[in-house]
Length: 464
Image (cartoon, one colour):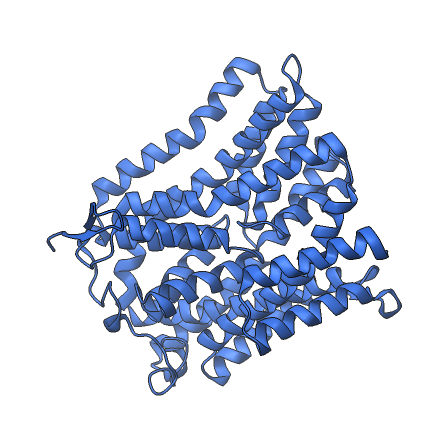
């Protein structure tokens, strides 16, 4: 299609793609998504769905879920990879780069600022109060996300059964996430090959009267964009570029500083993590905590929880807590560098080797996955995976609720059992208020976060 022009607010003309969405307009929307991306992957995916599918109607329900299903199969933060995928669909490589970078940038800056406060001032009551209130608000955002994603993906009892089975196996039995995804995918593939309507597009009842936004009614439409068609030469070139961007710094540090230097260790460890981070953020963070605390001695167990609190209450992927780990590691082993300079470099290095591989996975594989969108059996497999992922997201929501609303838990088998006598009544009150605001009065995410943060700070400073 031939590009057209639109007029910006200052009178300048902006290039538009064939689907009529200018890159400048898309950039503003991605910046808005980044600013609202609280609550972990569940909340972030819900925000993207609300803005890109429901409000803007740039892509349809089927494309969104197809892209999400692919991202769920990849190592790394699925919400950021989904942003890269959709940005690439809309505006080629440049769109993917803008979407993926903006998705990470606000969280990086926020956690960097909080990390400075952490090492310079320690535990400040005001900061603790803000975190206390924000956690209650984030719980409401996560619950809203489960409802949003679940209402879209679970269109029949078969899909609901898959979601329930996924929740039970991961929460109560501690089943590994890849095994759950594999089982759901195999079941969906068999169901699709058998022609069962329940495995079509999230269920056999999704086409009438349920307000589903179809691809044909969106800016991108139903057809496969030319740039989204598989081009083996382009895929090889882009893969080599991102492999070099990812691994060249690791090799350079190894050769110049040696294997025992803290920067080399950070680059090597988090590069390995980028390849094996299946199973959701909390599974990954458990592994990171074990290695960072037990193997490398970069920080203490309580400090890891403080970093998780930062990541949970700032925009961006929860895996951004790794930035805090790299910050403290370099701060404490700064060598001849100023500790704050070393810490800043450690945070940047950690973020780089954690998120650059995400661009590689999407740019290398998305054209081939997009081509398979019309394959009914594979689409059925991905539909079943989406249903299973709803159960996994519910598991994260329940885990977060337990650790937000109760001061003590007891490990029973594979799950944490909250001790009722340890209920945190102020946190419970704030969470109920946030839930009422979100569901009853339809208050936006940012006002709820701001109000809860202010109430949390007031409680810690003047009441506690």
